[in-house]
Length: 303
Image (cartoon, rainbow, N blue to C red; front, top):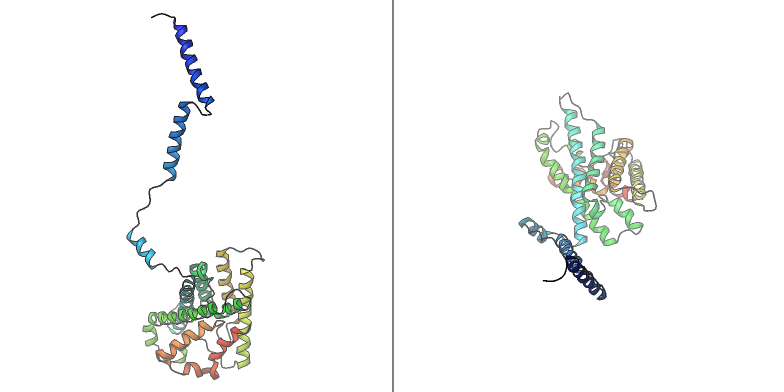
């Protein structure tokens, strides 16, 4: 072989230079760079494309039974929300009445009832608020209807759900405290025990006074709800809305609960009242208090 090492070096370097020029003249990149880029692109594509998660049996069942119709979802949400809200409230009244008449050293107070209703609606809003808005009260739904936030058919569905949820809550509380009701000295089907489920007036309360009592309490509730849900008002988070409504309910009970128990909700009163009617208390739940039953229905709707 002939030629020096420098000549070979010059040939190899010149050959590499020619390769670079060829690649660049074709508008491309050196071969080595292209190979590295292809490897990097493969890594990126593999990281983006994930292996599909195997669908479990429970996922498949959930996909089948999942309700996709929004109107049905809202209707069921109002049932569930009202059930949660009224269950807490009625159970607190039962506990208040039974502890008050027991010889136990612990005495429940009316404050516990106010707090239970407040925390009960707070829990209900957190559970169903993202689905239906958690009206849980025909008076609230009626206010939304009047200001154009919901249609009439949707209003009827909401009200029906609220009454059903309240009725089911009465059944739950009745079953939970059945033994205490049965052993009550004054009789299971006395009007005192009926007061666990529906509201009744003090003997001194007039019809006009009871109506005014319901109107005032409901107006305060609606004002707070509209303020919290007004987008032009100060922005309030979802959790803070639930907390604020809960404290408002408790405050109304603390301030306006003496006359007739601050129903301020037709579904909260009529649903449980109808349950007591068919459960054994009879027509006295409608005739007591000079037919007081219509006041917690009509009063909250006068807004």
